[in-house]
Length: 362
Image (cartoon, rainbow, N blue to C red):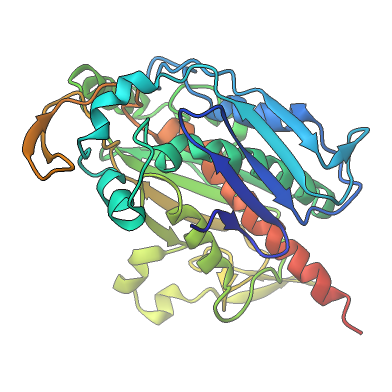
């Protein structure tokens, strides 16, 4: 079961939803990078459950403990182990799941693949696994701050159940996004989007949507030209997230409806820097960053756990009705924003180190 992501900058996440804890091992981080538990905590606080009325009410403080890999607030170049203890696990709420497969969850596929599964909240298939990703992404972010001080990664909710937001990716600020519980970028349509979430929550249902992400201050040259294209690694990172169903970069599927004369990004010189007049490429050409803003979108499905009755089957093949219990988000999007940012930082940190190795060539 692959649990490791990255090449030179690698993370391995571990733990189950209702076990004693979850966390991550970060390997490949260079020495002398400033890193404290508070650097990790501020990102975990953005992901943690129970932060608003439209998120799961599971009460987890998600306190980060660095058990190895740092000394006096600096990385040592050795593996960094980060632990987050589970404090509000309630495995008894999932007792009936031992014998019943939840629709659109990993219950059946996990069982058929491994012959065993942790039915307590889904185990490794639970979104609680992303605690390790966010913690690892915080470490990657500190590395990027040292290598590229002007680089910033900002994600936001751009669509909820068909209700769309409007903003300029080149100007949006993190302060604006963090100013509301939806992580919505503008006042227009905010009320309509929130109503969609609240309506679904009241009816025991869920809704999905889209998260946009921009990386400003991108250096040119990150990414590989064949299998490890920058957008390919970003796509793998995003589609490995729970509930993610689609990825597009730059013009995405819109490119299929354009002519080449419309879609090409013409070059021009800005001093000694090569720039493009447009950015349909989303900041990546030939799998390699061109220095323009990196821009992509990730689609998330509605949460599969419903308080409504659904048809399903038991492990013995008996057809039954299931009304799921437990504590779940009516919409994953607000808490997925920091997870998208974390995975972006992990991809960029890995490619940054790969480029640094290449820059050492004679």
